[in-house]
Length: 87
Image 1 (cartoon, rainbow, N blue to C red):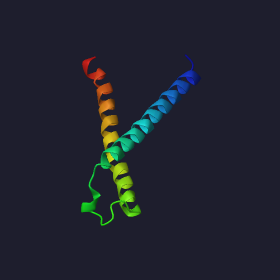
Image 2 (cartoon, one colour):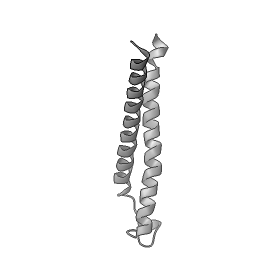
Image 3 (cartoon, helix red, strand yellow):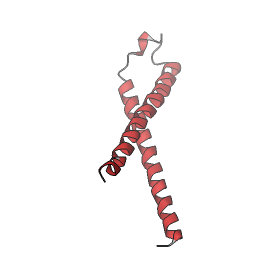
Image 4 (cartoon, rainbow, N blue to C red):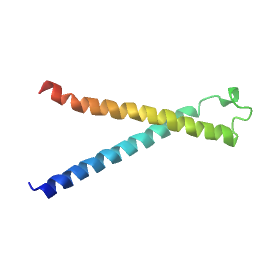
């Protein structure tokens, strides 16, 4: 196996991991958005269907969704690293 093939394999693996991370982040944000639809915003906002309230939901979905996705991706990486513990 030549150096060019090794570099190409590493680039493909990095691209696959990046794509997986993007998909997990997007699905996590959508999942949190779906859950936030059940949140009663009239406690926090006078007009819970106003653009400000919707923007708050979007920002909250991104923040919580990213945190959730980070946990999932960290857990995924930790489980992959466990193989070195048993070798």
